[in-house]
Length: 441
Image 1 (cartoon, one colour):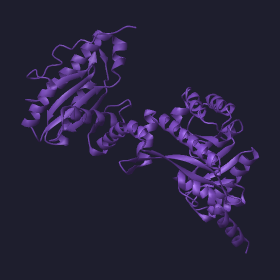
Image 2 (image 1 turned 90 degrees about the vertical axis):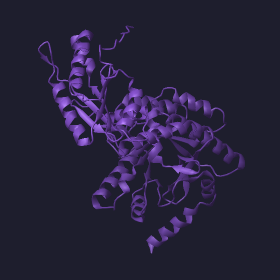
Image 3 (image 1 turned 90 degrees about the horizontal axis):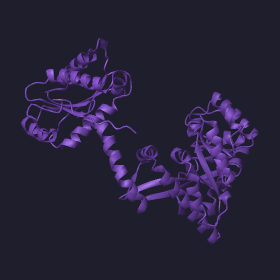
Image 4 (image 1 turned 135 degrees about the horizontal axis):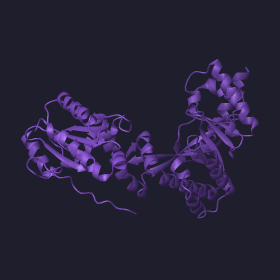
C-alpha cells in the first residue's frame, strides 16, 4: 500500500502573526467579541484534481486557492490551512449579510481559476459560525464544520454554504449525548421491554404480542423517535435487538415455570442486525442458554430491510427458518411493497402498515384492503393490521377475514407484568362477544 507524505504548502499554514489557530482564536475572541466569524472552506472532490493533473499540480492549485483567499483577507483577519483541501478563515464581519457577500466573491474567483489553460471549475462548501461568548475553540470549529456538512447541497455538484444555528447544532449535541449514554444504559439497564398485544379478531383473544423497547434515563423516558434512528445509524441497535431477545427468553422461561399462559411474541430484526452475517449465531448463542421451543419466537423484518435484493433477503430468511424460527414482514404498504415478491417470501405473517388505517375508511380504501386481504389469504399468510384505532376499521377487517389487530383500539404497548395480567384475564373476549351481539341486533 502506498502512503503519501503530505507536506505543508509554503506560507499556507501561516497567519499574519504566525500563531497557532487555537491561541489566536482566544486572542481574537477577546479583541473582537461581537464580530469574530469562523469560516471553514472545503474544496469538493479535490481528489479529482490530483487524479487528473497529479499531486504536484494539486499543490500548485491549492496555492492558487490560498492566494485568492489571502487577497481578500482584511487587516487582523487570519487564514489557515486545516487539511489538504480545507481552509479556516477568521473573519471580522458585523453581520451575516456581509459574510455572505464576501463568501460569494471567494466562490466566484476560485471557480474561475485555470491550470495550464484548463478551467478547473472548483466547487466549494462553506461552513460559517459566528463566535459566541461561551464558545471554546474546538466547539466553534465543530459548529462551522457541522453547518458545512448539514447543507442539503453539500454532496451535490454545486458550491454550498450554511450558517450554524441551534436547528443544526441541537440534534448534533443530542446525538452526542445519546451516544454517551447508550452503553451505560444497556449495562444498568435503563432499557425496558414492553409488549403490545395482538388481538385475534374472530373472538377478541390475546393470541400474541410484539416486543418493543423503551428507554428511561434518570427517571425520564427518552422518546423513541429521538434514539432509535441514531441506534440504527450507528448499529448499536444490534445490541438492543439481542437485549430484547434475551429478555423474551427470560420471560418465556418464567411463564412456563409458573404455569402462566404463553403466546408467541415477535421481536423486530433491524436492518443492521439483518445485514450482519454473524447476527443469527449471536441470537442462537442466547437462545441455547434456555430450554425453549422456537415456535414461541417470531422475527419481524421491516419492509425496507432488503426488498430490493431478493436473493439476499430469501437466503437470510430461509436461514432463520431452518433454525426453527418463523418470520413476518412488518410495515407492509409503507414503501414500495412488491406483490410479486410475496409469492416467494418464506413468511407466515404479513403486518399491514398503520398508514392504511390513519384516515377514515372510504370506498377506495375498502377496495384496496379487501383485495389485499384476499391475496394474502390466498397465499396462505396470516394478516395483522397495525395501528388500528377506530371501530369502523375493526368491523371492516373482521368482516373481510383479517386475522389479528395490533393497535391502540385495544391496547398500547404495556410493561411485561401488565401483559401477563392481560393474558390471564383476556379482557377483550367479553368485549368482542358483546360487540358482535350488538351488531346482530
